Length: 333
Image 1 (cartoon, rainbow, N blue to C red):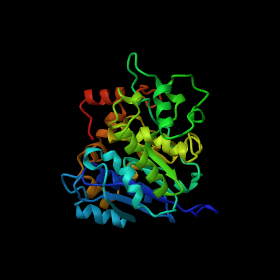
Image 2 (cartoon, rainbow, N blue to C red):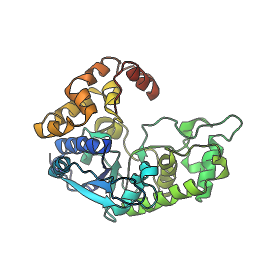
Image 3 (cartoon, rainbow, N blue to C red):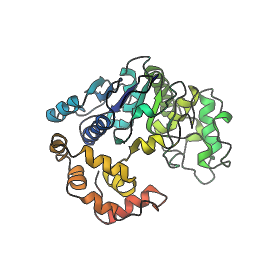
Image 4 (cartoon, helix red, strand yellow):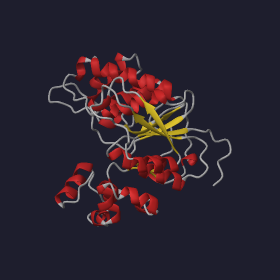
């Protein structure tokens, strides 16, 4: 496919390290290269390096897997953890941004994402950042007699000198979680990773070490990155709907989280893409070393999970889907 005329080149970045993320990185890279040919940007795999914040070496040590990722055109991008590391691995997505090329537009994806369409067709406005709206109201969790959504979120905007009122969705009722700017951090984008990363780090550390008193009852892990992210996006001139709906987290990408959830709830084109990109022998040989892929993809357990659900009439909460899969003994991650 020819590249669209006037396309702004951009880079893609995921985080990969030893353990589950290395296999997810292989699925991401295989789907990316299957769907997108002649991509002008780079596909970076940001890899945390050994240091005092990691009890063990976090790098991918499977040489066959590293070589396969290189064959798929992955650029390994080492970065140092100075603030998060093992204690809060979600912080990798914050610290990795400082290692990306300055001034080059980027799109970050969680590694547990499958590419199902050509990302060059997505009209990114890199001057107006945004992030994934495929989320539930996971934070804040309100306490009886405690502060409400407005009080909690406004305290954060006030802390960083941001205009709170302009962040609200007036179509949603007061004290309903979707009225307030809240994203899943499964993807986000901007025109410069260094600027975005520095702001993300500043806000996350300030919330972590000196939260407003209105947050006294709130649990910040694992939600810290998702609490800071809307503040970063708002401060850089972005918002909810700077992308057309239905492309990311839709026709062009799928943030599947874990393979049982992919088979349980995702559209048929996602399942088809997964099984096509996993079919080549060089991919199959490596993925069979990862038990969830072996069981779900190659031994057919995924289709047993899929048959348990009506994809057009799924339970409204993800936890209900998870619980049903677990009851049947098919849960893996």
